[in-house]
Image 1 (tube, rainbow, N blue to C red):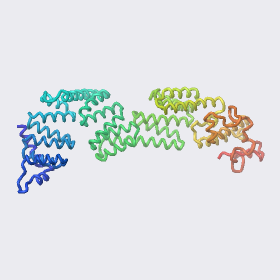
Image 2 (cartoon, rainbow, N blue to C red; image 1 turned 135 degrees about the vertical axis):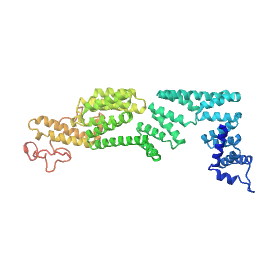
Image 3 (tube, rainbow, N blue to C red; image 1 turned 180 degrees about the horizontal axis):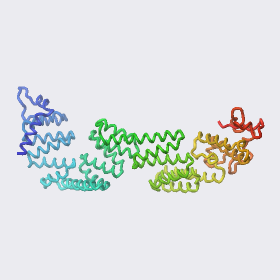
Image 4 (cartoon, rainbow, N blue to C red; image 1 turned 180 degrees about the vertical axis):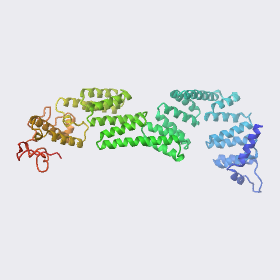
Length: 509
């Protein structure tokens, strides 16, 4: 009775088929009569051989309408849908064929194979049990194996044992290669296990076959987000929101990425203006938006460390770098290098040499080893210079200071230590003023700065410790290179020490 009802329902569906207009036009004889089901099957075979799949479907669908109890018609329709890779329709055709002719082992064998490929392995095992020796043992074993791994994967998934579930799913998907649900399930497991590259790869497979899968867009977008590829994340959320503007997950994901990007940019803009305090504030707010975004946080912590160094807040810079190292581990190359940089800025030269050497030992790639060894060389030079005359320390700037920062520091210190401004400690002021001018002369000149950074002698007959005494002439003849302040001398301090008209001329521009 149930089978008769199902056949009646299929007959009604055939009558309302979108192919009906084509069917009726093609199935009418020249004398106005109707083609037989046999003739329609023949025409369907010709169309199939010619790869005219739409025509073949039309002929076979009308054959089903004329002979709704003939399993052959549904089996032939299955062959067309199978060629067109329309798996869902093909399985429906086979179900009808098997229902009409349950003794036909060929139909059942095809259905069992198709059931395995779409991941319905439990149902496939039932067919193989009925088929018995009609199929070889290896073919049947594939279905049992697939069903076994799907069960194990499902159990592990429910227990949130993500890596174990992924392992079982890999085995299941090897057999059920057309089941996108299993692929998406594996993508979810990879995401929860923080294997975002695999998540991207698997959701890409899903979207290639089903471009309307909004959940796959969301999952792939979030995976890109945690890979710190924010633009790719935004693109995926936007594509999904075009299809469904109210999709909750994609709306939330899009909002999160936009918010974190905004805070990060504000920090970068503040840093570019020299407002390091505000930059640090914005960056910490960005980190607070998602404390699990470890790749982004690493990037931000490096910027915060560098900003503290630029502020000469060396204790804070080292603490931030140590915090980053604790988070990411002593094997993390970037974290070790970041600590070394902070120690170098803090003039902890012995410490930074050891830290850079540790980075060289832990390096994985040739590029990392090369970078670490160069850092070691620079730190050893800085250590040597720290025992002589450290121009960076004299000006109070970091070794990575820009020309603008060096010029600004020089102006401020030159004003502070001008001998006319220090009548009570002229001797100390003269020495400091000379050292400041010497530091500026070296660090503002690219060639001399390069030599200094490489540990080479900057001046002839230097012999260590800076310019030879007596060789620095800025106090005797016309002041610093390039002239002086408009009107001569130092503003508000007369033309030079002692008020004489032929005194020093200093240039701070």
